[in-house]
Length: 310
Image (tube, rainbow, N blue to C red; front, side):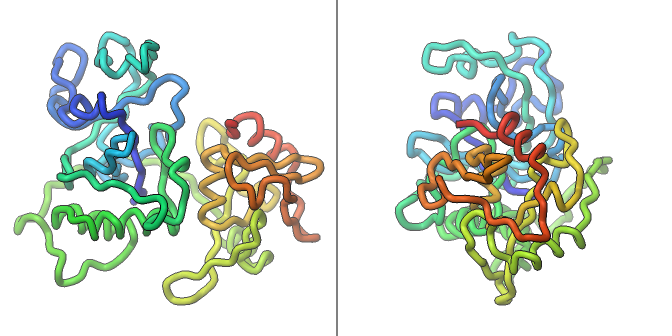
C-alpha cells in the first residue's frame, strides 16, 4: 500500500468530494463517488502505476485549510473530452486549463474529515510545506509517519485509523477494530509491477554505510538498525524504463529521495555539483561517490532534463 497526499483547491473541494454527476461522460459506478483530476502539466504519479483498491489518498485543501478526506484509489481514466471536466476545475485563477486524467476514488475509509486537520509545518512535521505542492505526492519514510501520526492524533474514524496504520505497516492494536462486523467486499484486480533487485539496492546501501550521498545523514529504523533508501536516477517504470543497475542507483535519506522523485534536485553529470530548489544545506555541495561506484552520467543528465523542475 502506498500513501499519497492529493492536493485540491478550496474552490474545487466540494466538486471533488461529491464526484461526477453526469452519466453522459462518466460510468455509473463512479457517479457520486469522490474523484480528482490531473491537469495537463500537473506534477503527479503516472496514473497507470497506481494500484486500484490499495493506494490511499490523503486529500487536503490548500491555502491552510488542511486534510479534508482519506480516499481509496479506484480507477484512472484518460480525459477524452474536456466537456467532461467541471468548469470550476478548469478555471485556475482566470486561466483555463485542460485535463489529462480523472482519478476516480471511493469515499472510504473517510469521505470527509471534520474538522479538517491543519498542518503545523513549524512543529509537527519534519519537512517543508513546499513538498506538498503539485497534484499528488507520495509520502515516504519519516514524512509518511509524521503525517499518519498527526492524523491519528487529530481524530479520524476507526476504519481510517486501520487503513492509515496499514500504510505505516504497523499491526493494529486492540483499540482499533474494523468498521463493520462483516468482512468487506473484495474485487479481484490484475496488476503489473516492476521487479526490483533488492540484493543490488542492499549492497549499495552497505557500500555507503546507509548514509545519504547528498547530505550524509544516517537514519535508524524502529528496531534501531540503519535505514536508507535506494533511488533509481532514471526511474524503472513507464515512461522512463530505466535499468535496475548499480550505475542507475543512488543511496539517499527519505527526505532527499522524495526531493529527487519530485524534481527538486539536479546533479551535474560531470562535476557532481548539487543544485537544490530549497535546501540550502546541500545546494552547492557535491554528491558523495564511493571509489567503487560509478553513477552513469547519462542517467543524471536524463533526470536533469526530464524530471527536475526548478
